Image (cartoon, rainbow, N blue to C red; front, side, top):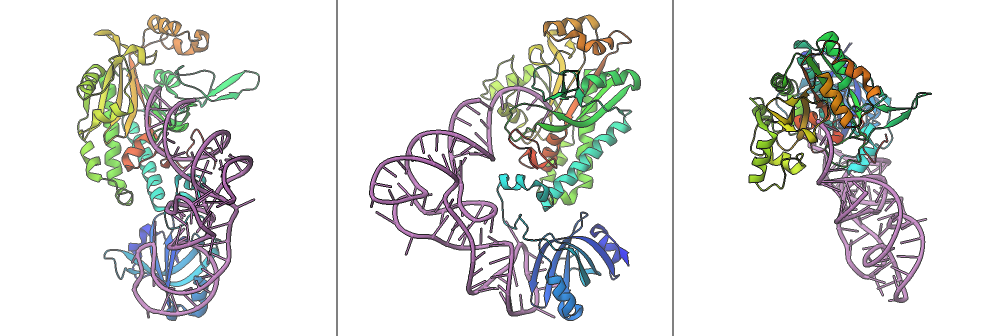
Length: 431
RNA sequence: UCCGGAAUAGCUCAGCGGUAGAGCGGGUGGCUGUUAACCACUAGGUCGGGGGUUCGAAUCCCUCUUCCGGAGCCA
């Protein structure tokens, strides 16, 4: 007996096979029983017919409940009602474990209930589709970087100090060394890596103890940071664009079924795979003010501003050359204007907000030291970081992608909490 | 942290001063093609906690708790 997965069903038409999985739904009609079966690779309608199966086996099949685990043997054949699809004519049903009343019903549920049952909710078709898109996005990012000379360089999660002093950190006691902090970005460590490997990236969870309560924030999320030696601001943006467009193409190619389940507008995604728009922060502010925004030239973009900037644009928009006051200390100054930095954000279309932050880094020892002193940073703690500007400093750039933000855009779903298996939010840590 | 909104059956909600309701899920029975299947019957509730107003409170008021949406900050 051949054990197969639902995804391969078409290859076994007319041949008796065995499938191992769970019951998504069950419908009965007298002598007929429809078991909607799933095995992780996909869903399949399986059909039991009492006269064919015999009374004893049929009664055993009827004991199955929602989400019971089961091994089903049968013969794949063309679906009687849906063209191009397959169903399985059951020859035997072996319950593995009969589930009691399943908490997640067939009708709609509220977000609080679903999040409290997240460990079960991930079995639902939409959640299944999102998790598979997450896998594809993750894979596509690594693939692009590997193909462009980047090496994986894992930065630590426990760190002795802040990367960007402005945001709040989660603290942990670290033996006799005092407080350690959960990393909010591996960037500074990555900068050490390029001096060895040339181009590096890390990919892992980062933590922000911000009391943010919006559909775009998690306290624990996954970030991909990339850093490259001898890459300037312009080339940095080219890499970012190439990477994002590769992700779009990969998701369209590998996740067609998932995007159908999610009712994602695929045309909108296709349209985003074209040259990205580029604006300076100054131009963006002018553009926004013409359209009624209250934003000033010295300030960051608000959520409505991000929406307004990409309204009517099929492609993401780069916002570059930011006022130095609102960006981090390590960003390199624009040689054409001392008040600006060579940094960029990338705003996704369709209102999905900022997905990338990047910049060329300051590579001059004295300038960097001066800025750190001006921000009253503990210089001794950052000796290692300053050393990079002392022993073979080079022009270099990097950027960070918020994985969940990117997935939110790809899947078109409303809230970031559904893009990660177990979301961590300000008021939620269970399960 | 600030500004709004909500809390009634396991779940989603209706009821908004006068005997606690529906759909789904559960149980029992029926049905040879179902697609959140359908039909019949059935079990299931200190109406979030506390206090107050009233002859009478799920319903009005106060308070606490929890959750949701938005803002700020950011990815």
